[in-house]
Image 1 (spheres, rainbow, N blue to C red):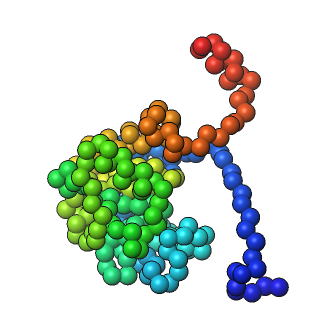
Image 2: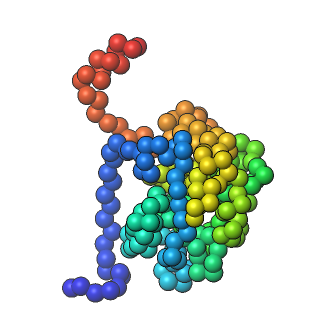
Image 3: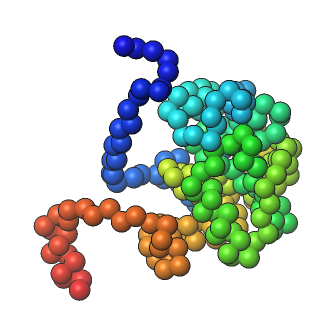
Length: 215
């Protein structure tokens, strides 16, 4: 019968693959998006298993994102229970100051796969990268702020709480990491190919003809 224990629960797995569109809008990659600091706080680490990507955790994100969109923003930034920056509703957050990249430490954030990839790519491209507490006002004074996630990929934040970040458009560090990440996910970087899992797909007949014509 129904209960609140998991000891007798079974595990089932489903995988779906489909063509993806621009999660934060078609112009987000070039222009960046506007965000605000949400009134909703990220989960306290003793509330649940915050390192698990659990569907129920998304209620927190849904509330924050809905509030921000209703206020005219595209994304929400959530603080942790101690008042430091945690992450966005579906993305991890990074800031750039004087060429140095900082991201909130893992205490109260989901340790995203894309976050891990960006940390590696940034270091491999010669950037100094630090993980640690990030205050709200550090965001306002940053040269660049960007977010990353499986859906969003790498997107700059051009404005936070009505304050322009940097030039108000996607900055050079963000743009460089955008391109580096794009090359990886498209399989154009051999040294990171072990990160990828190819998914075979049926090719429409008309596409086969085009491929033959090109080759």
